[in-house]
Amino acid sequence: MATIASSAEHDAAFPVIRRIGIADLKDALAKGVEDFRVMPSLAVFLCLIYPLVGIVLACFVFGYDVLPILYPLVTGFALIGPFAAVGLYELSRRRELGLDSSWQHAFDVFRSPAKWSIFALGFLLMLIFVAWLETAQWIYAHTIGDAVPASIGALATQVFTTPAGWMLIVWGNLTGFVFALVTLTLSVVSFPMLVDRNPGATVAILTSMRAVAANPVTMAMWGLIVAAALVAGSLPFLLGLAVVMPILGHATWHLYRKVVLSP
Image 1 (tube, rainbow, N blue to C red):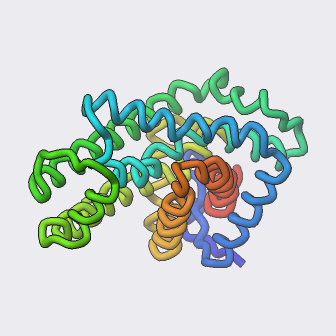
Image 2 (image 1 turned 45 degrees about the vertical axis):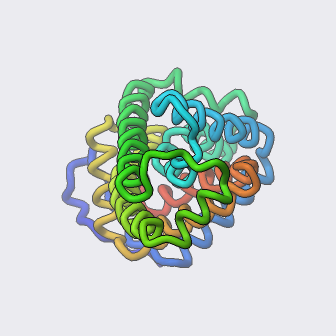
């Protein structure tokens, strides 16, 4: 049974936050799988486009071959995933309420009063994503060098068999962890909350921060689950994201429902 982590004396705009455990994460994932099983078509449609958008964005930002930032690009999907999944939150919300959850309703969020707050938070995550790619490129250039490897095999050889490559691994993953932690803290419940009750971007972000502060270990486990699932889903050729992303999106809605007390 979840316990109450914050007092009921908070202003009504700031909901009560529950403490949750690993069992709650398992249940949220199980419900995410069930939602995906019942509503697979739109999820696949959205998430096939999702990796393509990331690749096009990377090409636009850097203007050349994306091979040196392929790993940061794949892992960086976690930074914009909360925004990309807003339609999935809406479908899970509607299914939970027993409403029609056909694919057209995924776009209802962009006609709701919360749309500008959702767009504002989405823009913030896009800035974080671009900053991550820029930082990853800088780390690559200052460890491996500016030359673009001829193939994935050549890149793997550079990364795993040279001292510079190991420096890239260490500094790249440490930096990526910081970006992921910031994004998780800002967005783990903020987007679902905006879809659910539209308290405004500021309240949603602060609620997300409070949720992480009240459940640091559990939220860290959730972040690891998301990261591992995205890496697994990126194989082969990012196609697995068509399954991984919708499951994580639906599961995030159920995680939000466990952490944030209903009004």
